[in-house]
Length: 599
Image (cartoon, rainbow, N blue to C red; front, side, top):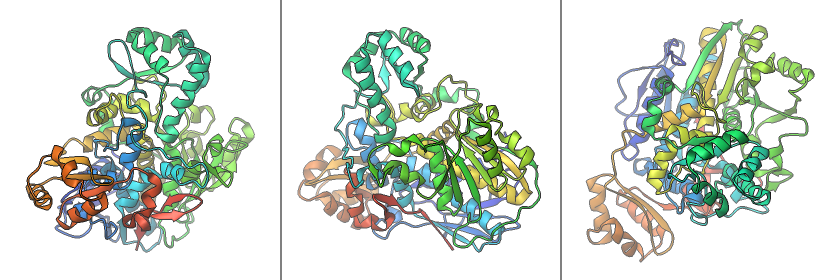
């Protein structure tokens, strides 16, 4: 299967591996391969990657962390502790703990490549872009941006700490045989019908529905015991039959090996994007970008929830003008508490950089309005249900017939996978093997209620748009670019396959607070023994660390060359960490600054 930039004559070199975070170095390499770039001999020193093309001056992308967070002592494990990801995952997994996959490596690799491709677009449009700097700490914080907004809202802030909910009183559900599975529906009526047939009252089903929806907003979903018990008393076949009769999707949790046996897996793994070239297009008048590479690029975004809106937010951070299309009366999620100045802070975290235009896509006038807007746009981005764009006369073929230079971007769920279920974060976690991998690492029966794939899928979508814009600059043509949550999941697990085990890794109690320690080498393990005054195993560490607080041990470990970090459990306290002070902006809540800078 052709990859997105196979015919672009682009070459690249990778920089030296990071000593404590080799997963990020591998993910950068993997993304280069998936994009279709020709790899040259690596660089002995200097940037994380270098992009080359006959029409470009070489582009250099560097990684830079805050001074108090030295990159050479940062690992996947310790950064998940520092940025609050352990806390968000721990809300429903029983305690503050890592996801158990190279999540931030995959996410930051996508962010690095996204900005590099955008800088190439900016350079080809006349801008002066030669160097990109990515702060992986800001990239990590972006992943929890909506949860951070909820925790720092001016009123009714959410204080959801790890371990407050029972790790086994949440989806996924379990049948009589012990099979774990996800249920999914986007409508409360099929949900109520399903539970009514199982003997659950409407009032209890309604309570379960409200808790079920909290997965997306708060990463918790404490289900009533009566609902869990009703399913645990029934064989899976009976539950499947009732789900089908009610219009509720059921997706069993599968292993990564089962996913790898699927017919669509190899193509999905080779590239999470599918680029379909459009017709040749005349060169468009262009604005020379100034400080940001996508200045002068106009994006129309018609997206709901997280994946698509996050993609639009990232494009706006790169300088694009993003016009968000919302239904008459606005997106209902604007009203989801907690709110500030009349808008949900979680919604605002993903959408505050965009202008808004209300359009009724159900009407002929609304569809004609979108078509007219596309005449002056560079990108049309949507995450409608499969087939909806064609039904509305707004798919790539329709729009390219009138606007041949347009990049038509679709942020979907399943792609070519034959799954009869909504392609949402939790169904894709279940089908892809991500849930099983995280469950094994977390000691639970399911994945994370942190919207891991929605977030990673949004970054992957924006990366694909930047690649498609670069393709347009090089070949004077529009295109259709598709990305999926399943493709993001496959990429995540593939980047996780070569993880060497640490010699000592864990989250440990101190005199006050939790400390994440990740000794990857014998030298680090020996340094920890010296620091604590005697050789000790993991079970001995809480007693040894009880003499001082987590910040003290974090500082001492860093001085000794040991990857370690205080574990932030309360997201509201993140901004008080001097290591992260420069990562935040202040709206009515704490927002995350752009992870990139350009020179």
